[in-house]
Image (cartoon, rainbow, N blue to C red; front, side, top):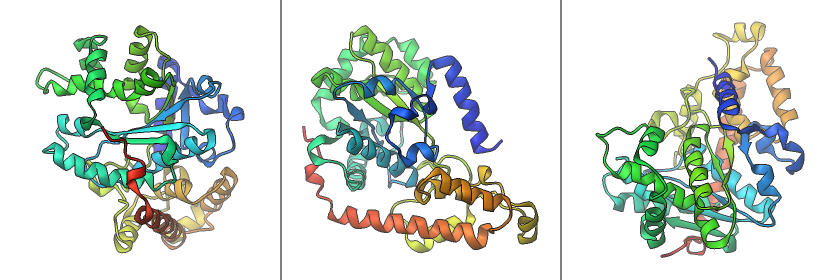
Length: 350
């Protein structure tokens, strides 16, 4: 099964079970954007309602347990686009508490160190410092206060089922559901701002929990947009838990080149076969990376897919080299921004 087929199957199931809708339903009310054209935005729940609000906020977090990779930064690039396009506030929790209770780090100090590093990369994307609040979750007293308040509206059985947690897990794991909900609802509780949350399909369980709590508290339910995970080298989503799948923002040029040359492609078994049979861009990590970081429109992407399918280009000679140049160009730009970013403008201090 190709990545495209798996995403399509997951979407059909979500449409039927959980009332999320295809982006095509509301494409006409969104400004033209490459995230929609490239299939990076794949579905939504109540985005149309949020866009009718006079003002709203976008919330998107990060669990700081290590360096950021291309998949992480693509999501925050989208968040920055929403902020610029609609002139809204962005709240970005760095969930050191999550990474600790789930055992991804050994102590909170490590998470705090990574949080500062991750925050600077995120801020480098051009967020408006006057309308952006990046914060480390465990350092803010209100997070605990709101989490305790919200915990009364969650049952243990509901959370355990949602997270797939059994009785062998530490009690921080079910409690973290309340923390996550607090992050999402804080702009609504404090400022009356309905929130929009960009997430992957696998994280929708948190949105459903949050919407249930919001209904019980008579608050505006958060909306969500669903972002396609960027595939890693082995055609599974890029993941910090599986370092060999990812291209990190800190990788040097030599490492990036070698990773791209090893990545899964939709090319044929040989140059001769490629010329005759063509390639399969729908089953190609390289093509997906070009969609994320190089092509500017669907027309450009479709034209490239056509010359791939008709054998006019060869993965090793053409596509991989183009992907390397595109990703290197993007990271060179981002690193220059990183060096110039004043993080103090963005950090929300306790």
